[in-house]
Length: 133
Image 1: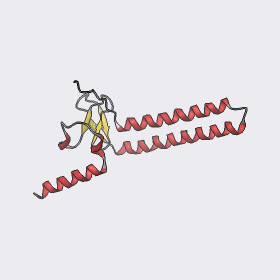
Image 2: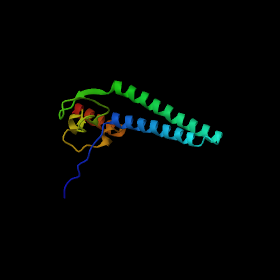
Image 3: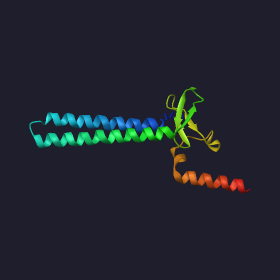
Image 4: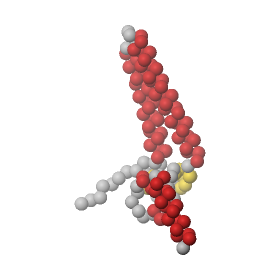
């Protein structure tokens, strides 16, 4: 049986896509408000909810911009284009190649759990044990 070909996505692109979806949902809700202009209170309710979605989208874009400034810039070994990494493992923004900064994870199956705080503590404890020996 053939192994499924998984396509990974970088965390920065996932968050940007989420913000874009929020923006379009806000616009669609406001469009729904235009369709209900015969009932003013309903129209203003739709407009208000739509504006809230757009403000939330703006906040998400601002937050990912802040995260992007502290992401580690690297050159992808597969496509040789510059990309940014958030966490220990991430995917290339261009070719979706799984990437890692941790030498012990090279060659292992790509898993998002490697970025969890519990895994990082476990990895740090393991490194301290190896250092003490």
